Length: 115
Image (cartoon, rainbow, N blue to C red; front, side, top):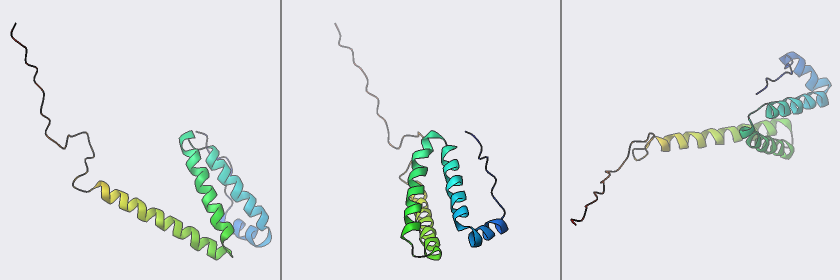
C-alpha cells in the first residue's frame, strides 16, 4: 500500500482557497479523496468508493455548506450508533467470541459387532 503523496495545505491556506478559489479547494478535495481510495487495500476500495458516493450525494442535496456539514455529521453519528449497537450485541451473554463450544458435545461411540 502506497503512502499519500500530496501534502495538505495549512488551515489558513485552505481558508483563503475557500474564499478566493473555491473550485481549487474542491479540486483538492476530489484529488485527495481519489488518492486515498487508490492507496487503500483492494478489499477496502469498493466500500470507500461507496462511502465517497454517499458523501457526494449528501453534499449535492444540501442547499448550502452548513446543511451539507450537518447532513454528513448526522451520517457519522448514525454510523457510530450502529457500531455501538453491534459492539453491545457482541458482549451479550449468549455470544461466544472464541472457539469455546457453548453446548455439551456428546461423542458417538462405535460398537463393533461380535463376529
